[in-house]
Length: 149
Length: 328
Image 1 (cartoon, rainbow over the protein chains, first blue to last red):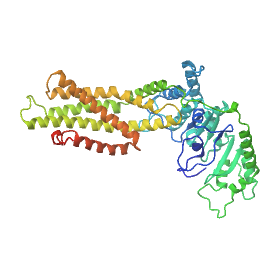
Image 2 (tube, rainbow over the protein chains, first blue to last red):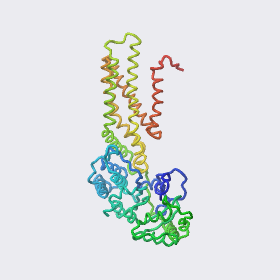
Image 3 (cartoon, each protein chain N blue to C red):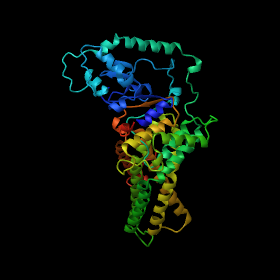
Image 4 (cartoon, chains in turn purple, red):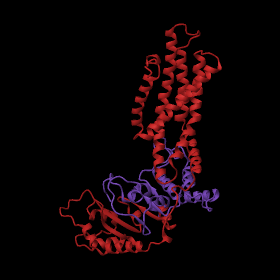
């Protein structure tokens, strides 16, 4: 907490997003030592700074992630079930209304800071992860909707 | 936050790093791992209703200032452990040291032991492959994505075609001639005009690909970390997406430049010229992609670009004639 921004956050280290510097200790998953390939497949990580291609629409961005991160050998994953899952995810993060808008950039307008954060979460969530990491969520991004809780 | 709570309720674990959350957000968390400067653990455990576990734990120590009614427990705990910048306490209370001896820590360690000893094949999360999809699926999905990105970036694609027409028009009209060159110097000036206009086009191609590709490269690093697709897929996508635009740009340039300058209306020289422009544009555009892929950012790549262009000018056969080059 409140540590220098140049230090990687513990979640970045656990989620294998930062490998510089000296890292000690071991990471275990259900008691099993962390194994890179499997861990990357079952975990999702939302970076501190949101970055999504400005030219694509919100739905395309989420759908791209779903297409490449849901196991295509799984018989439950069909075009139809994937679209449904994308719909549900967009709905859960309240992005359904803006799904056909382009992400845009700060220079040209586009999504608000908070919508972008929710989009980043949706992109990760649609991979159906067991665990979702959120790196240094600046509360401004999600606080906007908090008072309605 | 409403979204996050919903995700958590759907049975997914969420692990968030957060600085100074508001009270509304803080009260939505179930458990907290509090680290002080230097990464030492100060608190680890469930927060309890209205953060009561956290408050009770800290208030157990006599040195802890009591929490005021209505005070945000998150702010209070940070001030208490001296994480705030306004801390003037000369002999700060060692919360990390206290935690190391606390009941809370032994409970946490015990829990870890339980989990470690409880490992079996049934609760092992294991994936055999790095990616969820085949190389073919990845390549097509990435191609579809890059095609869409290219199509929706007129600032890059329409602009280069306009520049190609402008360069072709300006250079060809400046050197316009209606008779075949009769002296060596007129031939020279025509050769030079070809060289200068093509290199101009290429420098433009090299420089304009840089920012776009830099962004998508950074995007790719994230996608790669998330195990979405491999390097081959992005190379495939960005190569194929470039080709139609390079072809169109080269064609616009050739059609204007070749005919205005009054070159021979014969198939062989015309198609050679056309192919030459396409290939040169290819070289410089993909060189731009390569540079951004290998150096830190677009600015650095631009710096290296001038080196490449210098090399190309020196050894392109214009400044130093092929006859002057000693062939070993």
